[in-house]
Length: 357
Image (tube, rainbow, N blue to C red; front, top):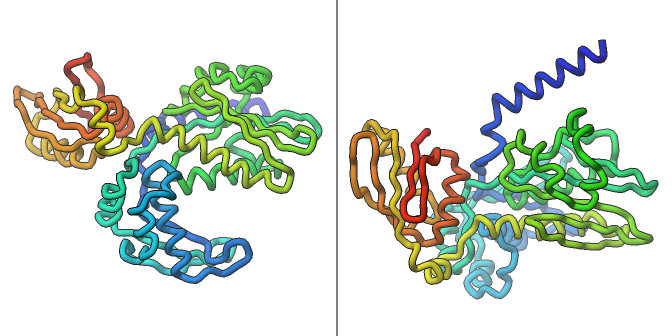
C-alpha cells in the first residue's frame, strides 16, 4: 500500500511539473515597486523618516540588482527626501503580529531617479535560480536542503533565511524536491565538492535559468559557507552567533553575481558596444493588427531597448530595427526571460523569432 501511495505521489509531482513547467522560468516579478520595512529593528522602534530611507534604499537594491551605491551623490540626495518618490504608505501587521511600514513607490519617479543616478537596471523579468545546498550538522550528517523542509529546524532556518533574502532582492528561486529519483541519482560526495555538473541534468525538470550549489559546515568554532556559481567558488565564514546574518550576506553576494548576468548600465554599455547598437529582428506569426499592437507594446517595456521602428512587413512576418542602449547579449537574455518568442534561425547579423504570446 505504501508503495502504491508513493507511486501516485510521484505521478502527481510529474504531472505538476509538466503542466506548470512554464512557471519554473521566465518569472515576472509583481509588486516590484512596493517595499515592506519592519517598524522595529535591532530592538528599537524607528520613526517614519528613518523607515522611509531604509525602504527607498531597499527598493533601489531590488531594482538595480546592485548593493554598492553608497557613494552615489544622486542617491544620497534622494535619501534625504524619500517621500518625494512615494505614492502611498501605511502600517500593516504580519501574521506574526509584527508591525511593518508598507511603501508603494511611484514607478515613473523611481525610474527617472535610477536613470539620473546611472544605476544598473534590472527589469521585472527575473531568472529562476535553482539552489542545491548541502548542510553538514554538528554530528557530521550531510543533508540537502529541500522544498519540503519541515522537520529539521537547522535546515528549515537555512531555507527560511535564503527565501527571505531572495524575496527582498526579488530573485525567484527553486528548491529541489529531493525525491527518490534524485536521492538515487545524486552523489553527495560530488555535490559536497561543489560540482554543479552533478545536478545539471536532474535540474532540467525545474527549468532553471541559473544553477547555484552550496555547502555549509561547522569547522571548529566557525561556520563555513561556500557557494559555487559559474565555475567559481565564493567562501564565507561566521561564528556561531552570527551564522544566519552571514548566510544572508553571502547569498546577497551570489545574487549580485546573478544580477550581473542580466542587468545593464545605461550609457556605459552603449559606449563599449557601438558596433552592436542596432539589431534587425524578424518576427513571424504576426498575422493581424492586434498581434502587431501587442508586440509593439511589449517591446516598449524591454529595458535594454532605446527605440525601435517597423522596417518591413511581409506576409505574417515583420522586420524591426531596434536601437539598443545595452549590448546585444543583454537584450537577448532579457527577451529569453520573457518567453514570448521562439528562436527560429539566429546568426551574427540577424535575429529571427516566432511570436507565441
